[in-house]
Amino acid sequence: MLWTQASNILRYLCDALDTENLGIQVGDELAVIRGTEAPAVLVELAFITNSDDREKLMSSKYRQKAAQAIADGIIKTIK
Image (cartoon, rainbow, N blue to C red; front, side):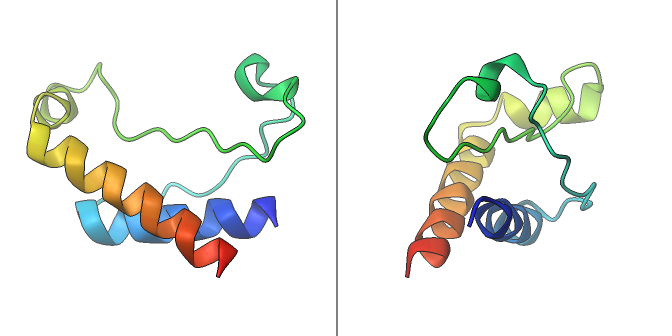
């Protein structure tokens, strides 16, 4: 289910934000999700080191679209 959830979130994010799909990475070694027993997905919305991405992240409209896309991907998974 976790792979499906990540795929759904990625699909909705790419569509909502009109961004490139950089794929899914298995995060078993990432400290932020390694210890959890619950399903977990780490989402990277943009790269703060990229000035265009940083500008997007400063926009509340962009952040709201991203949040809605993540929610939509989760809802799609549990339906």
